[in-house]
Amino acid sequence: MTQTIKKYFDLYLKQLRFSTSEEKEFIRKHLTVKVLNKGDFYLKSREIQTDMGFICEGLVRRFYLNEKGNEITTGFTKENEYVTDYPSFIRQTPTKYYLQCLEPTTVVNHPYRTIIESYEKFKNSEMQGRLIAEKVLTILNDRVESFLFNTAEERYLKFINENPELNQRISLTHLSSFLGIERQSLSRIRNKISKK
Image (cartoon, rainbow, N blue to C red):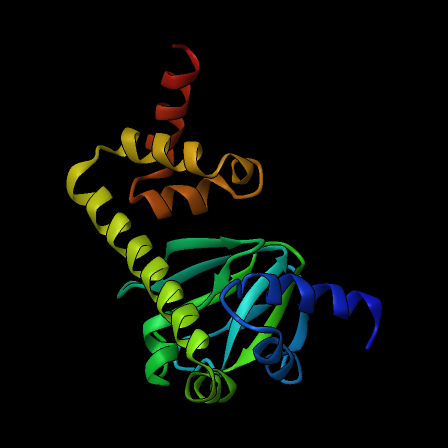
């Protein structure tokens, strides 16, 4: 194992703060690293995600195609976050989404079968799974509520306040799609805010 791969594995295993050394060694044996270029897909619609991905470096956009064939962005995943369509992953059913790299991206993959096996072998692994599920549920709920209760400007301000490092890393087109507004409307909002 190269030092670089070891570094990525260590970064991933550090996230498993409830796991014992024994659990981490069991998991480490099954991890792999995937290096993707800008524009590559980590996952495509109708595929089954067989590995939980953890981004060590890079940025991934999650989107689907609407009935007109337009790409609708539903999220971004950056360093130290899990790249997944979690409901589909847990059920091992085909996803409806595309997960595409916006930058060169390095992902540590943890196989579904090993995750299930570790749930059976180690009590702490169940806790880790629960924490991931809670985080995913919170992100999905926050997104739904932002469309129910916030204006486009409020959604934009919330996004840049929570993700200041992404402001220069994603295009206006992708951001406007994520916020559910036209690109021109986003430009007007940004101009209005800059004049305050």
